[in-house]
Length: 388
Ligand code: LRH
Ligand code: MN
Ligand code: MN
Image 1: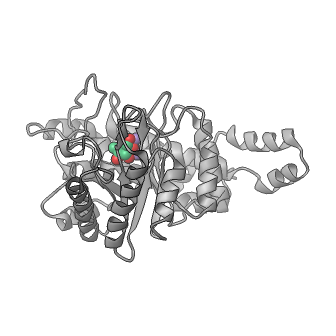
Image 2: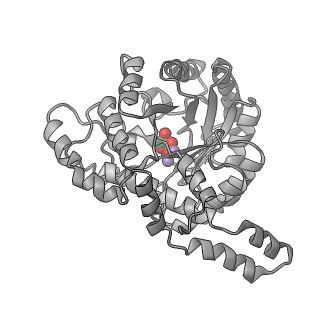
């Protein structure tokens, strides 16, 4: 008998993790971008690579796009291309961080003409969402200042509200806006949406279709992220995750790599708050693979999320609640840790096989020869990268 009960298996079978198109392009640090042979040359090829992840794991049915990186002439054709490969297009990410006009802000800029341009960019994203059938518009703003006194902090919050209101008003009935926060970078003194409280305050002022996006790499070291997850779920305002892991700052490493226990604790609060497989919460990756192969990097990532989800589902929540009620500190902690320390990998491999999937998706993909094939096929042209 498997350690994964029928109920646990049913939850795992519903799990869906969205992949970022930009994870398949070349990326790096400000020091060097190492190119990978076979890197996609356009959004069509990024989606083809993402579809491989779903093919071997059945965990990644959607792909998020970033505009303008994934701008194409015909979004309907892109949608059909994705569907033909067994995946769908997901969240549309806006981008106001690579244009000279936005040096001092986009949605918060002092100049109404610059704000207009940034708002219009979001209108374009909403038009794309209509064509792709996407529900969510994800907004991350690289806005802030580097020196005390440089900017009018309060005026910028007010302008942010006004700009977001215009974008929000343009959403269709079934569309949502998710506002991502990040405590620093590229600005180093102040950031206009630095934390969940600011994101919450801004989206709460907009209405029901506006939610918070929590990127796990966007907090100060030592932040209790699972507490924020709990609070946003409690408030009904957790719209999406950008999963990744970090040792120092916004490292964008493979989720679960730097701190598997943190991922376990986050997923546990997701379960506790009714967030797992709840359509109101989108689980996305936001990662970059600078030195490792990108498709296996994404396969490893979704498997890490699945593994920690299985472990979190093993927590005996009734026994835990009883220990908490009776003030049995050590017993409560033991119950929690017992689940975390359970090796679910053999049971997951068996369960995958029972569903017609490879027991070891990493090995199956490696054996497929896909990487050698794309390295041979995709010669010439410009390789797409983070920002291209
Ligand atoms: C910002 C961020 C945001 C962007 C992505 C490329 O650090 O997390 O989600 O869209 O990186
Ligand atoms: Mn992000
Ligand atoms: Mn980030």
